[in-house]
Length: 88
Image (tube, rainbow, N blue to C red; front, side):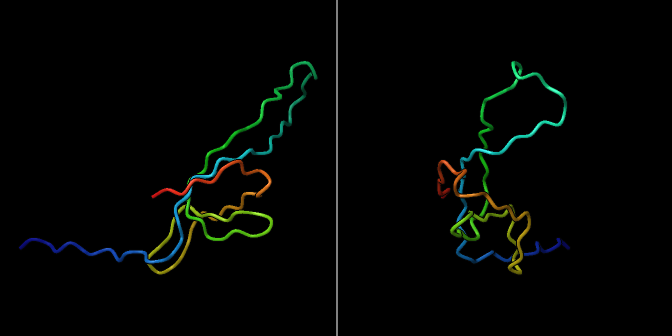
């Protein structure tokens, strides 16, 4: 007898999937010479579900579960964000 496929419940919440383009902070812990410094910015693209937007940051996460849990919460300072694009 064939096994029945288990139906996965859909996640029905209003969080939208977004792509965030932002500039990240950088650090180096080794000795360096001033003339050898890499002065280029670290441009980042992050994709996730937008959970909230405060006066200070955008809060996203990687995963949402059917029991309304979230995983991989991440705060990006608004001042670092260059662009937010909604993914359909």
